[in-house]
View 1 (spheres, rainbow, N blue to C red):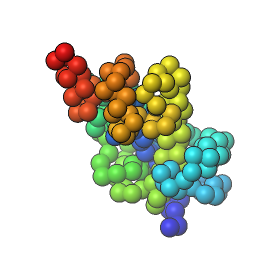
View 2 (view 1 turned 30 degrees about the horizontal axis):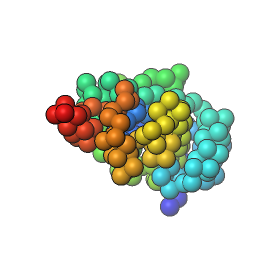
View 3 (view 1 turned 90 degrees about the vertical axis):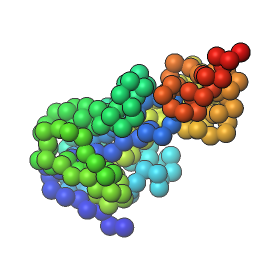
View 4 (view 1 turned 180 degrees about the horizontal axis):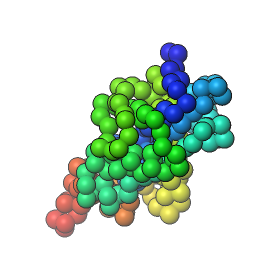
Length: 198
């Protein structure tokens, strides 16, 4: 699919990590120069890990502005995952260092913020700036989860990045939750509730 590049003042926004049972939710905002097009941009989920890393370096170097931000596990558990995602998106756009003319967000809703914006369903495979944001958000969050694996190797975070795989659920049952587990999420809450019974 051919990507829409949009005008110079367009910021694309996407997130990574809404579904996992552990770790922060990460959002990125990217402003690209249509005159300096980056080959290979697309939805981060459609790229190999190596391709994402290569493209992330190019995006940081070639973009007009970029910012990656997050909402913590504590904020996710306090606010809920949707509100925490919107908070991370706001932080990412605020961190660009320049005001965008428009902000296009992957998905079906935008945060409440002062910028003119629109939601673009499957925007990470339609709009270049959103695709770039999806790559930065995904690579940044993956780096975070690999670092978390170094301090909590028993959960296998480097393999599943916090998603609720069978391996992760088995580790939760065996070891309980660590501070980076989202206690408001059903599978984590269930393990914690069961551990209180013994």
